[in-house]
Image (tube, rainbow, N blue to C red; front, side, top):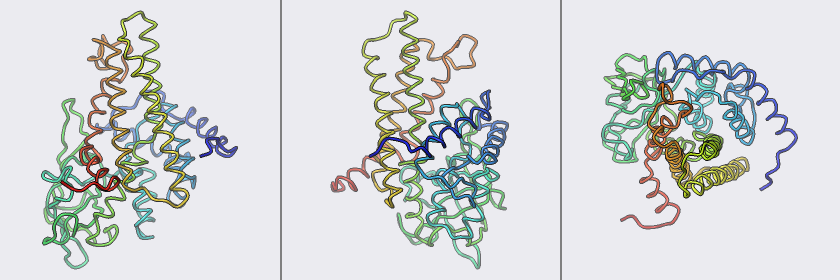
Length: 389
């Protein structure tokens, strides 16, 4: 692997850094789990789109820049360096968008991708159900053909961005007699369709990160089917590959956290506060692991650019980045000592930053995108060739 950037890539980095320094919000936006913050983040996404940086590796005709995946990694590094806001439409641009690129019809690409890139339409992920979380093959919500429509009945829960999103992508059982992975169809559903009830799920801090969505004889045109009927599992696994293995969590995110952790360690030591000796080694290991994940991602991108695919090894990535994220935040809380329990907005918090919020979110990492227990089963069976128990 050649780890040197080309002059063209260096020029792109310079352009991206200059634009972000001039345009990224100087003040932190409200959480996009509130209506105010959701709209503020959409406005930022539209500004990104106008600047040509909404989704740099997408074709220009679909709202992108026509860059390659290496340039996307460079942009992500500059994005986190600038402290730019989180991507409110991440379910769309990082998960569904690449899937539509891979299996969508020309009409679907033209219809959905430009409005996704600009965040004119924000997407919720609708896979989990009350009895189909990690065991997604147990999906029971149905989508039965009737003329030119699917008629959808059932429930989805933990729909990320569901409280405020405009569209939902999900899997539904189109063959009611089918079992497990068979007979599922991937369907794109506008959330303002008659018969849909969206019920926000509030967290303890009253923010609406998720929603449960109920379908009561909801009619959706057959043209909203993504991929082949009954083959939704294969489409979903393509989406999951992007989620676990590459786009949802770029290495820049963890490099940024690792840098902040190193700075916190230095500041804590300089203050004269007691620091347990083993924390020095832990901080160094976290930094090395973030760099290792970055190199592995560059290797994955190089393989994709050469015509390869993301396979079962995405499960290895997902375990690595989710457990690294938790470890870095745990270490930061240990360095902060008693102040670790204070939220950034507390009058006594001082400069504790967002470490507690980050830690709480990091705890979800081993669960979303498929629990790490399930990922270990995938690794054992599909990579190591071990038998099912």
